[in-house]
Length: 361
Image 1 (cartoon, one colour):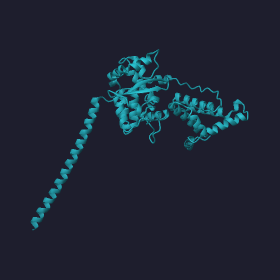
Image 2 (cartoon, rainbow, N blue to C red):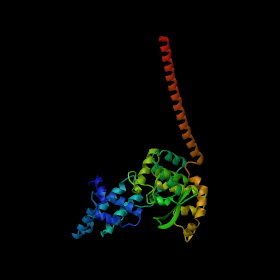
Image 3 (cartoon, rainbow, N blue to C red):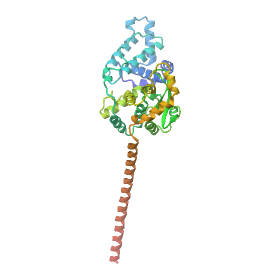
Image 4 (cartoon, rainbow, N blue to C red):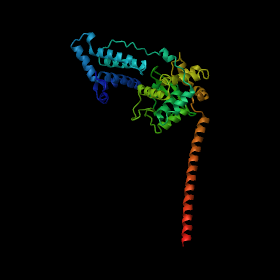
């Protein structure tokens, strides 16, 4: 079976059946996530979406028995492939199967198949310790010229959001700034409810450095070579590569671990209901509406504890600025000294030449 079919990706957006299915989604996060799942399925089968649907329709027209349906066999083969694939989270694998089943169902092709892949956290994942601030510092310092990764890490850390909410951020979401903190109003896809969360000063500065000219409808975090929104897999890959570079376990440095860090450091220092609200968790009864109305109290509590979510303190930032200025000053001083020495040598040569000329005369 053909597997190396990257040219198919270029044709995907021209596929009529794919476009009808893709445009049927209202939520951008679902669109991008499901598209990624179908892309992988197309890569695995070596077929375009239209070819897949035509194959299934042909089987039904020809009254092929259920156990011989080609599209079911393809999904089963893909499922077996996913079960043995390393480096891909179970949540992502399950989502890929959901995307494929939805694709066929949307085109009136029934698929009665259970993936058997759970989306719940595994014991191994739950046993991964909460990140240490020194490791987060090390990760930020190691980003180097990668302004995207630095801004993404700091934004996830200071907001306590899942990567879906971070990927959905647009320029317009960064307009409401209170005491240096960004107040983001958004509908969380997982719970489908309106809430707000906060992005700290340190993260905001990193975003400005990464994207200095953001327009209202521009996504904050995009692919490197385009302004297209990121996929969950792209973020996971970036974090995995950085974890490998640092010698960290991929699970320890996964984007969701920063969400765990947020809850861990704020629990006991801030009203727990505030923490749950800011993380987008569903609150009982009317509490959700109540906390929207008490935005100022939540912001005040967050500001008091913002230092717990800050990677580099004010003192460290000032020290860094001082070291940079001192280094610049030392460099300029050394340049002046070298220039002076060069001029001195030239003057000595000129003087020696004049003296030699006088003796000759």
